[in-house]
Image 1 (cartoon, helix red, strand yellow):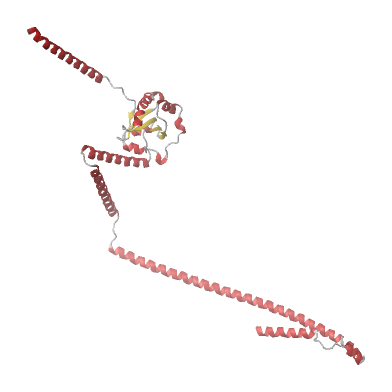
Image 2 (image 1 turned 90 degrees about the vertical axis):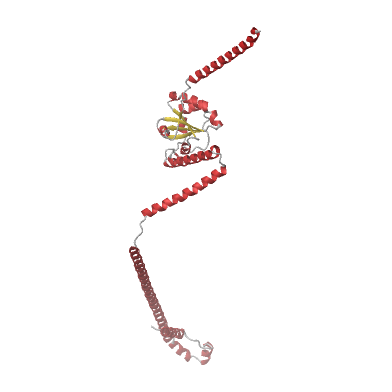
Length: 350
């Protein structure tokens, strides 16, 4: 009976000892595994405090987020590329955009993962697949030389991108604060939005008040007597200006009158010249007419003997040869035209 009772007890004790030994062995294995040094990563994490290291030498940077699947797929390739960094004479770094939103704003990162090459402070965007072989060829064959660098305001070291980094840093802090309200404290999201809107309005009012105070400090109001004197001087300046304008208008009117007088004098002289020319022409015509009259008179005197000879001929012959009605001679016509021209000239006056 005693041997039958002790058998199960011994079996139970043996099973408990075996389980304890197995548990101790597992604990020792875990401790040994933990005691082994972890493999050191050759990728240098970049932050806002040490990012200026990329301004010297040659660097490759990777911007990633822990929740990004595409970033996780290139992690092993990036680690392998970093291990050969010494052979390629290049340093390799990475930036967590969740922890360092300022750096993502400084490089203006809009897609993930994003890769950048830096050579002595000159930055270029690498747009390859991000695998080890392509990264190695990009450095060995110096393909980065054919890529347009980020210069001017686009450069991460410029003042513009520094301001962009500040804005991204503020947005990152607001995002962390929003997560603290909604996740840690369990506050509804709309309450968090109301809080940020109210804080924005209050901040704007305070900034406006500060600007007003600064302007009041730099702007000193003038005393009353100085303002009165300034008004008087302004009125006197306006009066002087009006007088000057009036003088200028008077001078302009005088000059216009003189110009009109000169133009009238010129017109009168032109008229006188034209009158003289007309008189000269009329005198020439009168001379011509007088000469014609003299010629006709001489012709008539020459024809006198001929007429006497015709009178001696019989009346029958003279009646047959004489014209039926006498006609005025050319001399009479010329005398009439001469008289008409003299009368017209007398009517015109001197």
